[in-house]
Length: 266
Length: 304
Image (tube, rainbow over all chains, first blue to last red; front, side):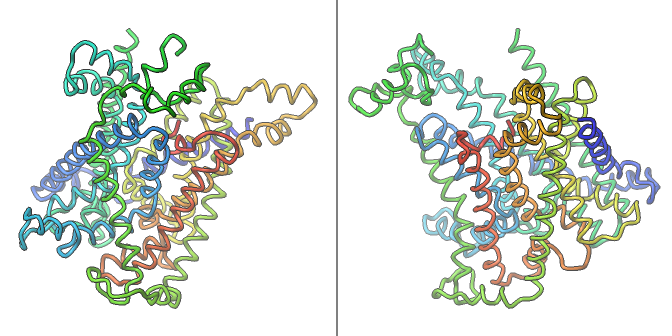
């Protein structure tokens, strides 16, 4: 047992070393300089754009995933597990190939735009690729499963007697949904938002495949600094900025979750 | 459960209770069944159908056009396997495939061995140390991949290690251990330690008790996580991209550059093969616990 434990300690040490190494960044020194460069308007634009895209992605995922999880958890009967597996399995298939397939679907001659044109919702100038919505669509496609799973778990756990009680107390279907079902599954929704937001914020493949030069996200900048620009110190500074934003978000979420728990147990 | 009339709760999943057979009989007689908790929500159904269409459309496109006789990605001429034969004659892609298989295999073995050890150790370790190490295990799971990629790259550069296939393997192992540990930890915790104690009372050494009692009980979860790790590492792109050297790059990295610099229809063929491979593996990982008589394997992915 002690062997197991020592090996675990060693690994944890190695792990923490791996993730905190760029904090110290001993080799490439000069810290303040890079941070000052981060304040440049160009970087600020990209940072805010990433925040905006990731936030919109979380909200869109919630709006899409809620009906899907709801229909499966409460109305799919014995097909529940099969349907959830049908959602989960493709999401663990190769991310690049999926994103590439998505870019084919959303391309100017792809099925989505053709359909929209046929029903008159788009004209020949409408584009999805190389626009902000295109990148967001990519992020949603990439990460919506992280929303569906916690929501599904929450809805599955939901006692349907609560919904019935809502109806018995003369709540209409919509009112019952808004005042009974949604509050009861709020924790699942919040967990899903966090789980979507984190990878969406750091993603660079979606902006690469589905966006243009005006849709770059912070991940693209980091990748560029490390591979094209060879400006490693700036790249690490950007990484740290990304990590800081995410940690603040995570911390807020954990505090919130603990408060919820305390309230629930009271 | 027992106080509630089963007829009033037809929407509830069929929990095995004392009245389960009766409920099942009721379900078979549609006229006896009361209305569900609510009418079927049409809006949610429409969204769900649309969602499934859009979920599989991109995958379907890739598969469809991998059999296209033309180079076009919009017009399907007729069926042909020319892109597959192009792939099987492309030595660069083939060597990348071999490299990816090798990396996945090594990462699978390494991370499962260490992950099992870690899961056993973490559950048994009491007190602060155990809970802190448990928390640190979760960090790689919530950190965006690009950050772990950058961190690994910096670590190798800082140590003066040349990037190669070996560095990819080490990074993949490091970050896959978390998955294995998270999957296995709850299973280990669910095991009754008295069984192990009983084995030792009956004369087994500590190691024998672990080997003959604990590990067989964990076998389904271990196998499932091994398959899962193989698929995840094989498909992983970001971490491999940051830590690979110039010698045959992993397939995912190669595909990324290929898609970036002009699309070759060979990618459709490679993509189809990769999709088929990973979907088979994931489905296998999900159904392994079922083969051993446990219900469902989806909790593998949600982690509890």
